[in-house]
Each structure stands twice: as structure tokens, then as C-alpha cells.
Amino acid sequence: MRTSALPSMLDTLAHNYNYRNARACLYELATEYIPTQDGKLPDEKRVVTLGQYGKDADFYTLKGAMEALLRRMGVDEFDFATQRENPTFHPGRCANILIGGEGCGIIGEVHPGVLENYDIGTRVYLANIGFDAILAHGKPRETFKPLPRFPSSSRDLALVCDESTEAGQIEKCIRANAGAILERVELFDVYRGGQIPSDKKSLAYALLMRAPDRNLTDKECDRAVEKILGELAKIGVVLRG
Image 1 (tube, rainbow, N blue to C red):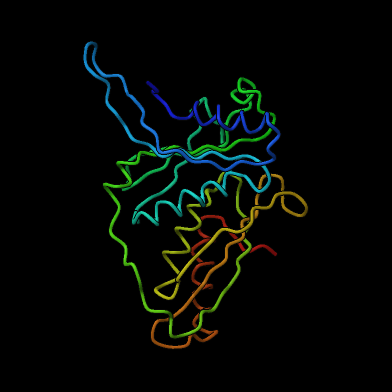
Image 2 (tube, helix red, strand yellow):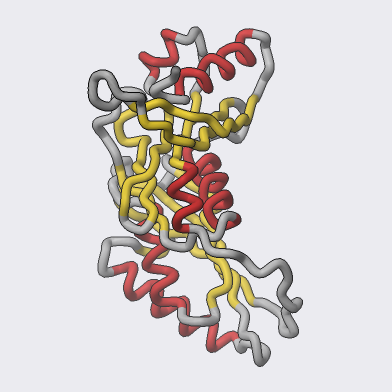
């Protein structure tokens, strides 16, 4: 009986890698058996495990897949918090998954030492989250909703911040200050090197804005962006020049 579903996922990824499959993106709905007191049956915990390697696989790709899963299941209050102490994962490339402020899972890049044990010679990314926690916090979604009557406006923001600044912190700030016209925000690029200082990184976000009752003007969108940039500057995040 497994106490963790992660080794099984690593076994499967290793099998694919050693059979020369250039990429893999897998999931499993599994049961973990958590030991309790001596003489008592273990607690059974259902989990969703995601694993991937290969072209286009990175921390943010897997994080996007996890966010899509949570939103599809009707979970609105979730967050990611940096985790540096889990020996399975690379320090600084790992995060706890929080639902309603409670730790329910983990996501990150597997530590190179762990990959050596599985004879995997490429970067691997794993996520593991409690399925029952998803069900407990999920809300029913509308099956259908009317198509938008008015066109959207988009803005791209290329931002420069400290390496230690979390992408989730920036996204929170954008959502909190864009107002009701913000329909979607998406991180689509992470860049280091070139003209970016060695202790900095560039994060690029795509913003989609729309009003349900009118056409948005450029001034409305520009005001929203100005407010976002003003608040981001307070946490040391600036527009890339």
C-alpha cells in the first residue's frame, strides 16, 4: 500500500524516458495510505498526481495545468506558497498548493538526486494534491453562459522583478487592482539573461479586459494598467524598459 503516489508516477515517467519517448505528460487518480496508530488501519487519502518531462515542460506549464484543474472543479480560493524544505524537489523550484489557506498539495521540479535514482536524464516536474480537498472546496459551475456581447481589449505587461518575487504575488496584485473589467490574466513568458540583471527576472502577463454592458475605451484600459503598475511598483515590480 502506497504512502505516496509520487514514486509510482516517477516509475512511469522513467519507463517512458528509457523507452526514448521524447516527452510525457501524465496524470493519475490514486489512493495513498497514511499510517495511523499501531494496530489500526491506515487513513486512505485520494490524490491527483501530475507528472511531465520533455519539450515545453517546466514549472509554470505544470502550474498552469493545476490551475486549470482547480478552476474546472470550481475551486476559486487557491494559492501557491514557496516550499524549500521538501527533499523530493529542487530547492526554490517547489511550492505548496493551498486551498482556502490550507496546505493540500505540492508542485515542483524534482531534485536531480532523486532523478538519478530513477535513471532519468532530464528535468521532471510533479504535482500532487488531495482530491477530497478539491471536492470539499469546489463549487458547481454553470454549464452554459451567454456569449459576450461586446469585444475585449488586451494588454501585455512585461515586468521585471527580483528573483525571489513569486509570480502568484504579482498575479494577485494585478487582479486586485484591475477592477471589474479584468476577465483573464495569464503568465505567458519567463525570461532571464540578456539585459536583465543576474538577480532579476522578467515575467510577461497577458491581460484580457471586457465590460459586459458597453465597449471599453482605451482610456479605461490605460487607467486600469496605470493603477496596476502603481501598486506593483510598491513591491519592487516595474515595467520592463
